[in-house]
Length: 282
Ligand code: PAF
Image 1 (cartoon, rainbow, N blue to C red):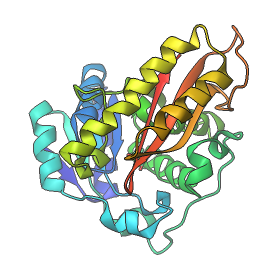
Image 2: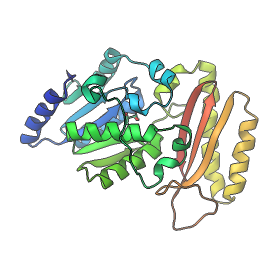
Image 3: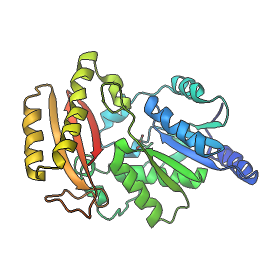
Image 4: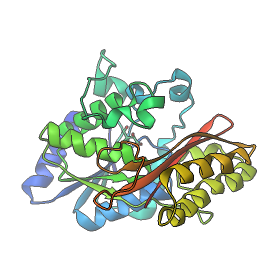
């Protein structure tokens, strides 16, 4: 498996692969890989001849310096995990911050038609400008045909679709289903920080979302929202940051149901200082 640190070298390699007629899949990650990432890589390998996995902890998408410092980094473990999927046809791109940003470690300012102001946008200042900046830069360097994003970060997925549409970037954005632990907990690099006991408690998040999905057929959005808030009050170790039922296209919170709109329920929960997000199609 080839590991590249230089953008010029990887882009030259990609030009040569494209000349041979290969299609390029791209799975962007910040490392700390888990089975959810590997599922994205497997899907990308089924649909492309070559898959690039970027491992880059993007400084501009962190609103808290401490989170950036604490973010787990272990390229050797990440590469070993990728090798369990395939020894061939995967290129790893692990550039330094300098290689990507030079001396100007800052984000561009994007207009994602309001998608950036909902949910995560209300709690993570500047986050989506950072994500937009790095993804646009990666697309320009790597020129993938297809790029794969997990639906766990559904808002991010919609924002990347908006980015490619508005900036006319020639990449297909493919959303992939949420990969879950046997308990139902959505896979996330942050789960590594949960104790066994906290992992058991965290399973309540998906259990609640499944109950919400059932209730959505008969109950009003107000009643469901109240029910979720009450349910979390009975969980002393879990702190509900937000629960929202939203239109999947605008991500605006819904008050009433319309048969012409597709909805999803979104949730963010703290267990101590560990923040977990999840969502479900309704
Ligand atoms: O979802 C992530 O891990 C990051 O936001 C991404 C897409 C790799 C950009 O840094």
